[in-house]
Image (cartoon, rainbow, N blue to C red; front, side, top):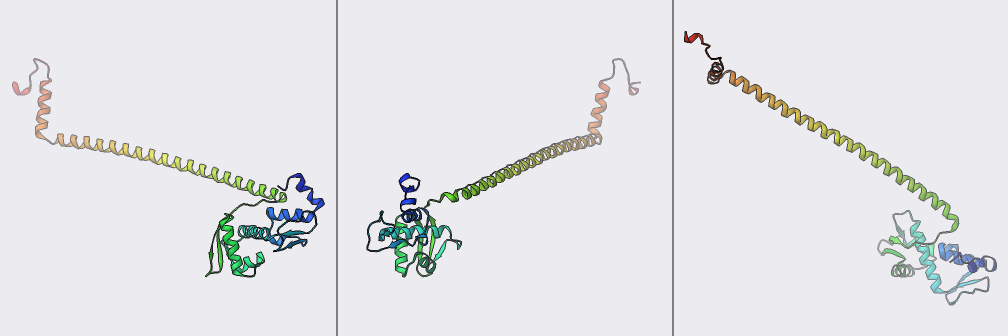
Length: 226
């Protein structure tokens, strides 16, 4: 919306109004210029005068948008103390605070729960807001660094996976070779045991002698036949 020609023209014709529109796009309640009057009895924007009157509904909307920004910038594990939020939004009572939060939840601006006993708001998620053009280079840098980090992690993960695959393949080959060596050793041992048993078995020895005698040439006599 801010990029539209008629809105951009407000920078010259009504800078206070333009600043107010910027605040609704990506600012907070504390960013309101001094020329903005927060009137609870006014139900219209004054687009002609340099003074902008915020109706109650617009003020409530800006408070909810400011709550989104506060939650997004929070470093306290997304738990916002009531006292901090009330000061940030310019509220004077807990009832006002809880009404604003409940409306924001109902309008799907945030996902949160109120802890009246602990006096804090636990925010789980929030809607996105616009960002000023001046912040885009910084966002691009952050995304570029993130993309590079993701690429580095991917390459490291793939290299580690290849190394582990090579280790598994080498271990499998060693296991297969060990199994083959064991089978060959068992076979050699069995053959050695059988040969030893045959050499000490008389019946086997007699059969071996008879077998040798049966293989003598015709007409050949043995010493026993003389």
